[in-house]
Length: 454
Image (cartoon, rainbow, N blue to C red; front, top):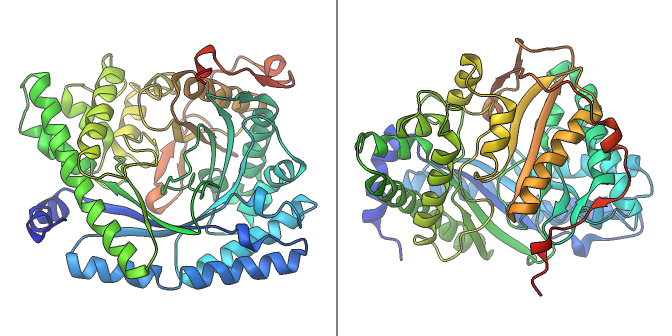
């Protein structure tokens, strides 16, 4: 049980240290909406979502008011649409009609994002998978709330390089399709390795086929809380530093557990997991980069950055798992450049490069996230960056992801503006040596030797 003392203990963190519940995400299975008739499919999808999620936003607002805990976003994730639409969608354009239906349903119930316009192709692609992936640029250009993801690799299956090549092309096409808005479409497209079935965070959320008909997943976030706690142990040893991070992560996760339990009870929908990721925002004092600098780095990207991030990530997980029996999703530290003022400042200072960010993804929760690159970057180069990140996830048995934004018409030194939680980002340089011959090879990279555990 969570008591009111624990709630009151967090008031200071909420008021002064940017503690919030980043999202309540309602997962909805659409498997029972499958139909061979496209119009019927769209009708069933709209009705299922609007009925299941009709009270999501109002319940979230009630919990905010009653407990004084900010809940920044109320969101929906659905079964990967490549599966749901396989019987009815014969072309990419057919899938776009489903995207518009999802967008309309999300608008009706009042959520800001709906995730699950997705395909799971870590080993191979069906025709339905390929059609959905090819529809992504048009779908993201014609909707406001749709988030899309593609899982192209896993530790058990290897990396589907045909899908990697196609996704690089689709990232580039999405940038072109939304070039009037600084290629914003790419900010809602994530390429995964080892994608979890229960991730509540956008843009990568979808409801895995192992999940039930509906589930409540909650994502908490408190970089500012962790930084403030660490200010009190400046100059202390690593043991005290780690204990402080763990205790703080415990308190933050308890807030998420409270909100998840309340939302589950009031909506009559089972509670799934709490994702205890440290997810930054552009707000001052809500930065993962500032935590790392508080640990002792002059700037993020300096020598020692990867070690500091590894320690932070591990202690956050250790503290969180003691606070909730059901921790899941991604759970750790996000390092999105455009959404973290400290990361933006480090890029401007020259301490943080794309290569250093890639090294950091070996130990953080996700991967290369919200990174703006020159619009002239080729699709093959984007695919090469994706392949590198997928290899890190595959070999290290962890989730990794890529959310790159080639901003059409802009180059290194320019700024891209995305707005809201997506923030803004400096255009970062990309290695200009080519990898076309590598990316053009067909097939998949085999799973690593340590994947054989049966």
